Amino acid sequence: MDDERGARPILPDLAIPPDPDLSLPDLGGATRPTMRPSDEYRPVGPPRQMQPPMRDRDEDRPLPPFARAVVLATPYGTIAIIALVPTAIFDLVPLEGLSFPLLVMLLSQAAGWGIARAAGGEPITRICLVNLVTLAVILPLLAVQAAAARVPYVSNEFQTATPVIFATTVAVVAIIGVALLSVGLAWESPDHAALLFVPTALLAPEMLGAPYEPVIEEILRFVFEAFILSVGVAFLGPLAPRIARAFLPAAATGLLFLALWITGRGPTLQPSSGDVVRVLDGVLLVTTIILVVGVPVMASGVRRVVWEMRGGRL
Image (cartoon, rainbow, N blue to C red; front, side, top):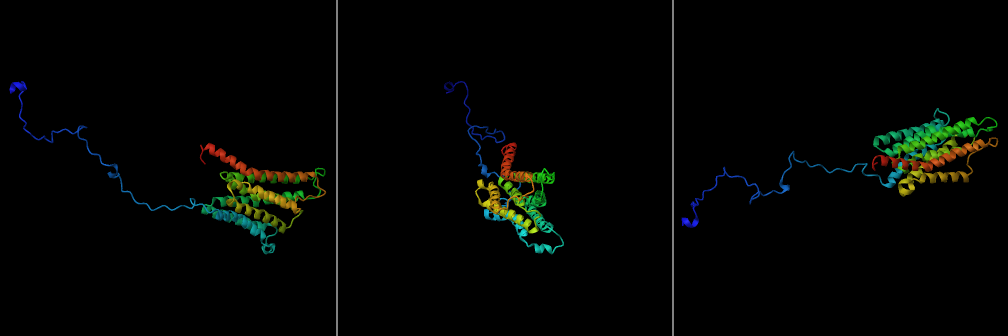
């Protein structure tokens, strides 16, 4: 038998169990460790706490269109209501002239600005700020320009045109400043920028129709008409289609021009004055018309430039 199996002896199978201390680990042979599903592993760190559901913030929940329309129209409506107060009530206050009703209007807008700023109402803050500038700067300058243009014998021949030229130039520069302020405050929303400029655009033709030495009631009527139209523009804006919102101020201005022309309340000219008054009044009106159309266009341009500078982000 030894010859059949060769020279090597056959050792008997002793069936000795392997020593666990001398056994090598399985490095990828026949058996592989069973992998546990990933969802059975617990994350390392403190246990996750359950958070309460987050509520929607006010800025994440915009107002309905009707409510937004009422809110935007409130600052303009406040000024219009004050302008309707009988002047006999203002006579009880020891202040003469237009100063006290104008002061009440300014205080109402200052209060609105403070309340809106504390509540985070950015659109109302902008409206009240521009209204303050319109009442404190634009209205007096337009009144001065109207008074200088309605003086008799204003002509270059009489060397009396310098005051009206200076008053008109200052008024035009101030109106352009309000237009730029509107664009700077609301460039991200062209329709809102156009809304901010509405009272200034409406006061210009109103004051050009003022007679020589107007009384307080007439000035308050001009303010009421300008701001009640502003109420209409502010109220219709959120309710109108987006494409039409930027054109509402221009439409309101055109409607006012038509109403003044029909009622014969255009620029008042003295027969003794020269053509310089007509030219200056025309410059003021043309500037206003260009700006009421150009403010939303300028805001759109600024928005486009900012969008490109920020890499497609606003």
